[in-house]
Length: 314
Image (cartoon, rainbow, N blue to C red; front, side, top):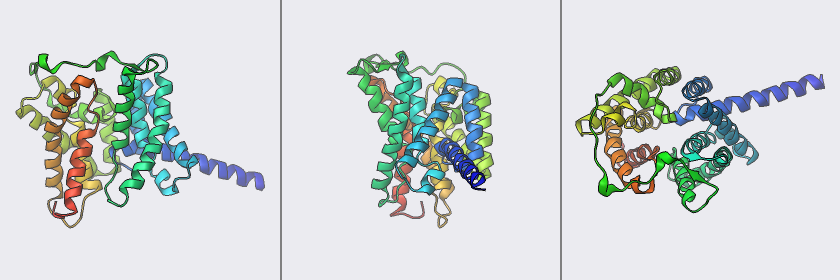
C-alpha cells in the first residue's frame, strides 16, 4: 500500500512538473494552457529542432528553479516562472556562437527565473505585469558582454552597423498571408508557415477571442508598417507583427477591464503603436548589434495598462 502511495505521489509530482513546464512555453503568448504549450513546442521543433530542444530544457530549468527556490505553487503551476527562461534560452542559442553557447543559454534560463521572481516582487505593488522584461534585459546584457568577455561569442548576424551608411530597402513584394503566419512565429524566432499555423491553433485552443485578437493585431501591424514605408522583407518575415500580437492580447484580453467598451480599440491602437516603436528601437540598437526582441510589446502594454490606472475607459 505504501509503495502504491509513493508511486502515485511521484507520478503526480512528475505530471505537475511537466504541465507547469508546458505552461511556461504557452505563457510566452500569455496563455495558461498546457496543451497549447505542447502544440507550440511542436511548432518550434518543426521550425528548428535545436530551438525546440532548448525551449523544452529552458522551460524545465525555469520550473525547477521556481520549485527549488520555494516560489508559491500557483505561480509555478501557471508557468509564470518559466516563460522568460524559455525566451532567454532560445535567444542566447540563436544569437550566440561557439561551443559554449548551449551552456550559456541554460545558465541564462536559470537566471531568467530568478530575475522574474525579483521583478514580480518589485512590480506587485504597482499591479503592473512584468511581461517579458527580465528576458529582454538579461539577453541584451549577455550579448553585450561578448565585447568584453572572450568566452562569449556573438553571432555574425548581430554585427553593429553604422547609421551614417544606413539605407532603407523597400524593394520586394508583400505576401499578406505569409506575413500573418510569420508574425506569430517570430514570437519564438520562427519564419516557418507551418509552425505559424500550429501556433495559431494553439492560441485558438486556449480561447477563440485570443486567436481572433492575434490575427487582428498582426494584420493591423502589417498594414501600418506598409503604409509607413517599412521594409517589405521585414514585414513579410513578421518582424513588425509579433510585438503587435502580444500587445493586443495583453491589452484587450489578458489584462483588460470589463468596465470599458473600448478595450478592443485600445488593443488595436496599442498594436499599431508597436510598429513605429519597433522601428525606432531597431535604429537605436543598430550600433550595438542588438535585436529588438519584445521590448515594443512591453513598452506599449505598460503604457496602456499604466494609463488605465488614471483613465479606466482605456
